[in-house]
Image (tube, rainbow, N blue to C red):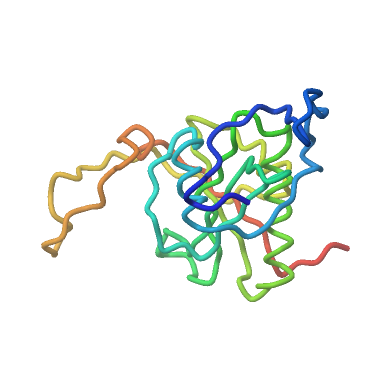
Length: 198
């Protein structure tokens, strides 16, 4: 996979192999290779591809993954501990999932399924994976297709970030992706890592 200095930006869906002029057939999601990847590669591609929250911190991230084929990345994901402080810190929070415009159909749901299986095999003590859907931009199709369950729906948030945090001298985090995306109601989806298929 490309490293941060030659990160994948945009390639056509049909690729020429071996320098020939005849394109290969269109990719299917089942053709993709899912694997761990360089975290800064994932950060840079999220910035290029994410629909609502492209601006993302450089780190720290616990896990970064890519979905690719023939050396070209089509989707990336970044995971960390939950942003919601009321949730256990050993849960895994899918903070960003972004796919290129030319990614094959069903890439995201297959990618999510693979990542959950990866965590079940390698980190079963993490107990649950969670993620938040922006209800003003998406309807949750990929979560449902990957077997996740909706568990909570938040309200639209109205935040005044011009003042200091109550009882501190610290300001609030900057709404780097804009107030509209920040304020949108979020639906939390979950999947249990401790359950095995019957």
